[in-house]
Structures are given as structure tokens and as C-alpha cells.
Length: 212
Image 1 (tube, one colour):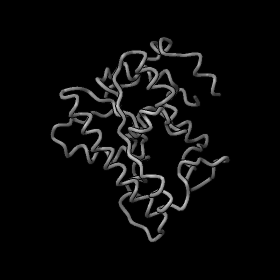
Image 2: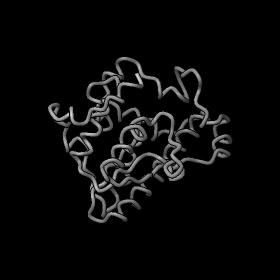
Image 3: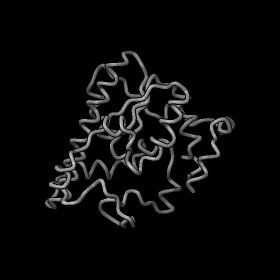
Image 4: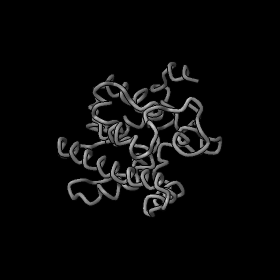
């Protein structure tokens, strides 16, 4: 909505360029089956899933999350209750973006070393802060489970192409985990290139402007 190179038409056009056998999305099986997605994964529930359904493209969920009881025990807050006012830091801050961040958004952000380095540094170093350490360990376990589910999806589509749609914070660790599987060949999203600007009019939808 706010970045020319990250508007909905680009996502739809890029999926067509990839021509996947299945689009794997960052949703748990229960959220996928009950159509109760995360409130902040606009690209998945409002762009990619409707486009895939309309064009006969298979989709599959691969996310994992702890039970509500375990979340409360680990963080002492309900992670499913999003704050009314977005905070400047800590939980919920990642759904707030400044102008520089919005200008930097593009389809292949997860391959940008500048964005990956802080994630790698955070994930690889433990901390004495018990709440921060809980978040780091949950991140590592969640990404591990995501990788295992992606492997299951791949096993169901031997020789097929899977477009994995995931938040960029998970991408570095996911790539490390999946690279260890000899039956999976990882292809960077950027290898397919950006959609041609001249083709985007076919993928524009007037409804894209309504959330503004």
C-alpha cells in the first residue's frame, strides 16, 4: 500500500512469474483451516490466498505457535491480543514502520544482508533478560518447526516448486535448516526477478486502495 515496489499487484505478478505448484504461507494449520489469520499478515489473507484460489493455485500452511497457556506462561502477556495503540518498542512494535522502513520495502527484503545481520546476531546470542531470552528461544523453535512443515509440503509435491511466503525475520534460519535437506533445492526469490512494470495493470485491483 505504501511502497511502489511492494504493492499488491507486484505480489500477484510475482507469483505468476514463479508459477509454483503450491504457495506455502506463514499460517498455522488451525488458522488456515478456520480462516482466522494473524491480524498483521495482510499479504497472505488479503492478497495471496484470494489470488491463489481464484487462479487454481494450491496453498498450504506451515507456521507453528505455542498454545495460549504456554504463551502466557513464557511472556506473562496474551500474544493474541494486539495493542490498541502500537508501541514504540517490544511486542507489537514490528507492526509499526517509519518512513525510511517503508521506503526500503521490496519483495526481496529477506535477502538483504543489512536486514539479515541484526537478526542473525540476535538469534545466535543468549541474553540474561528472561523475557528476551524466551522470545529468542521461541523464535528458534518456531522456525525449526516451520522448516519441518515445509519439508512435509515438499514431500507431498515431489519435483514441484514451492513459493514460501514468510516474514523476513524467519528467512535466514529457515534457509540454514532447509539447506541441510538434500531433497530440497533452495532458489532465492530474487532469481525470478521483479515483475515488469508494463504487466502490472493486469494485476491491479481497485479494492487494493480501500484500506488506505
